[in-house]
Amino acid sequence: AYRSRVEAVFAMHPKDEDFLRHWTHGLIHQLTAVHYNPLWFNGGRGLSPPWLADKYGWLDAGLAHWFEIEFDGEATTYCMQEQDTTTRWKGGDWRTNVWKAVAAEDAPSFPELITIPTPALSPRQHQFAWSWVDYLMSRDPKAMGQAIKLAKHDLPVRDILKQAWGVSMLSFEENWAEWVRVEYDPKRKTSRG
Image (tube, rainbow, N blue to C red; front, top):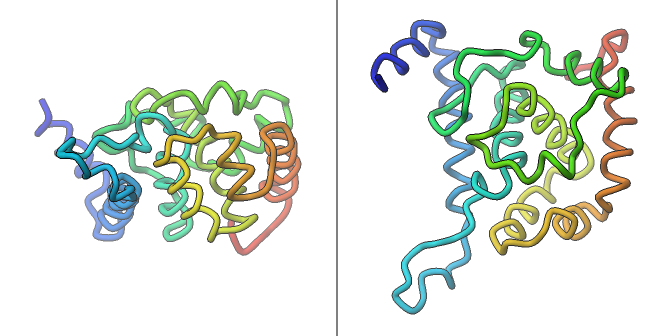
């Protein structure tokens, strides 16, 4: 079954540039997975960190998709730990999809979605996770490294947002929605798409 799923994915995306996009997505998952605290190895306990995908699915999946879109303009990868390899919520234009949902006041609740691990995120939730990461990267991309470190120390998302970007949970959701209304507006042409 696994082999047929892998073959199906490569049959859908047989070009080299697609392989690079899929590889980038997987690489980001791996890089964030090993962003660890060396103290976890002490005492012969072995490695048992709070993996990003388990507790911070929105950050794990959102960042992997962010790099796909940033480097290649689209996100088409759902890797082995993600739920869905074929379904796309409303097609491939993630900016427009998220913009329409925000304009219609139909965006998922950030506080509710941040509790979902990566493997359980739906295709729609992947697009919002990407958008939240996109917003945070637009504010301060260097803060992402700090945020991942804080996540590895098992801090609540409210503390991660406050310490890394200086924003509260409530203002994050409001500021993100306003940013989406401007940055993702299909009538607005930007260098980002």
